[in-house]
Length: 468
Image (tube, rainbow, N blue to C red; front, side):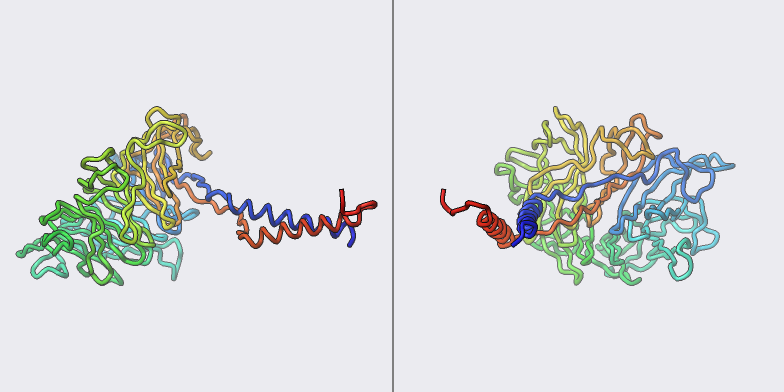
């Protein structure tokens, strides 16, 4: 066998060994922020106007960002209005603007827009109008049959309509909204009703509205209690709803799962043991919205009674409740975490996200992710902002961040020495170069090839006897 062949065999063996080692230590995909909008920057589809204050942001599975912003400097007007905007990468669109006419009700205008959420290249939001006290849950989406730039607005549900699941109720007002990427919308509404069911959660699927869970429904696992106040909620792509509610039974409150068929399961209740807290129990869930990912894992914030720590962010999956991070835990690089997030976020890989300050540490403030007990900063105080924004990140608005299933993070940040005071950004996961994953047999093969090639090389060496 020639020296060149032996060299190639040994090189192949070493390559297999190196790739096996690389696969074992391959880093997670990095997050790279890009600019979505700056205050003082031109407002999309509102000629001559600029963005002012931002107050909500959400991100869909395809990276579409929906945000609400004040619109200033309207030509010929001293009015300040608000709009709902969509940023889908190259495509940027105005979805709705206060004081503009409703697309489906001529002669009526939007007077207040709120609760905007993102879907793939679409936005869902609620609106007050001049004609009715409330028209809720208007769904904007691209009309792809004709031109990608055109939009259509369809009313999903409005005040005065009968509320399914209530004997006498009609919708009186809407104050919460969640959406998944398969087209299911969930909203909270108050009712004008003669019976006790005066509020609840409803689904909209395929244009059909149905009751999901209502006040005074039985609350399983609570000793015969019933739901008294339905708080924050979320829905995943399997149309499972997770909701926080106060209860009038043996416990004060809990977090519950509602299946697509309507079955309700308690996930965690006040008084349950709180893992990782030195014997503490869950005291309250702060009326914050729990979140749920595509695999059914939920994350939630809770305060603790007794034990050694409060508050904390916890998760539940497969009936097992686990601690994710506690107030006062060590921060990456030094110091301790002092988080103020009322609502965490979660991606489909199970990473849980939260915003926190750092006491006595170099980071000062960041949006963090925690996975398997390891906390890492996603975007931190002092990091360089994208070149279009300039400067560095100088802080992050509490509860002004959102995460999609693949782990992209949309957030609002203030800037220091930048082109503006603050802006909306999207930290996108960048696909790393694929590294083949090799198991023990592959590594063993590499070692055998190296040893075999080496033995052949030694046999061809002049004077080699096999002995020393």
